[in-house]
Length: 328
Image (cartoon, rainbow, N blue to C red; front, side):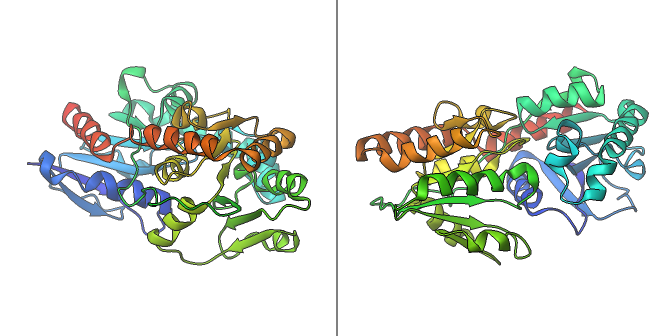
């Protein structure tokens, strides 16, 4: 049985945990045993190292470049791709953004030949990796995410008058434009906007009529119910390396509004309303279209989303990972 050492530091973002847990679930039946480590001590008895957490275009960590082949999952290159104003919350971050991006590029130039393979979470991210890392194309394999089996439509479907947005409220998540678009369509309508944001984020939105903040821990069951009963999931990100919430919403039968840029159209296919994320009027127009849609139109949106989400499988994703491990 192949043994894979998986670098899982304690501060791993929640989305990376979900990804790794779902992929690892299928490894035993595919002949892969795993050893978790937090570094910098590398397990001695593993065949391959897998770094699951290269978000933000981060280059490989030097201590992982040892005797075992290193496979890295790259989730995106947002701080290199976007301007400082569209990625960082702080003025300091904005001012230093070009320096940070240059440091990441130099890191890749230094260590790119030491990486055995890159797993890109989307075709979009693969193209980003080709441009930003200079890693050879033959080393980059696309393994798209799946969607958890808990995310299913309600039966019978009952829709309530609210839009939903879920994110960490980073500038690239575009929450300000979502709220501005909602205000322009709200007027005298009863529709609401529910924002699921971190506890420390979004207080200024609480004063906007019709906006409610959902903060704190939420179970998967609670999240599923929010998706199932929303009139639409509004997710017009400026940048996504994949965009897992798009799939989660669609799998629950929730119509989706998302972006024409980055990986969003790749994940959404023909099943979502696509908008220019920097155009507030387009976001508002899409929201108005869902408010005014007939029952038959909404059912068509829901069915297209369910079909689209069904094309993404964690088992297929895991199988491709194992192929990469075997190859290196």
